[in-house]
Length: 264
Image (cartoon, rainbow, N blue to C red):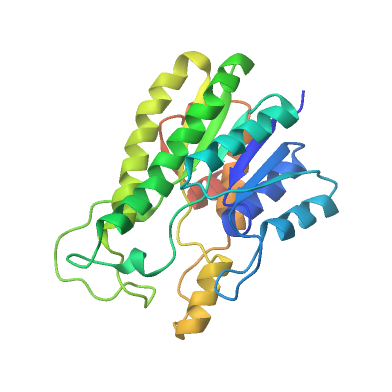
């Protein structure tokens, strides 16, 4: 039986490239994202991703959804189950990474901005995992891949120059939400052991997404050491379709390192 995957944030970047690679492996796809109309600051749409998948023979299901809204999360899972009757793979790629909130520091950071990061980056993955869990248990296993970030790591508290990208340093909300995601995934992985549900975090590295490229162009910042979205996408596709994903469960996997080590 063909496997079924939900991929969030599928209109561009890592989500789009992951969907294309999963389609090559014969996985049926449910694509979720907010963007239906292209904007200069955020190139790429759900429709464009679907068109590229159809051009290679896939038949994706498209769900316009805001993962910060519970009703939309419920609709993503319900659409997958109604269309295919199962979910085998969940890729929690969507994240709150754009706008001034990313760079807002104390004391200017508002409660609303803080809670938005956690709603999208932590609560949405949890709710989608819960929604897909019964199907994965019934199927005898599954794979959940969650996109984290190096921003989740602790750093020495010392005078810091402007970030190596030339952009302002992140405020506390994004890194804190990704650190919470890491710990949450580690706990859920333990719960998944008896059901053979692998729950993994992937650190993609500093990826030059379409949005980041547009930001560099708009601000005049020179691109630094970046990697294309296809690199972490290769790692994610491997984790989702390899013979023994349980070997990675509960871990934070470096996407670029995995691709290099396995020559993906």
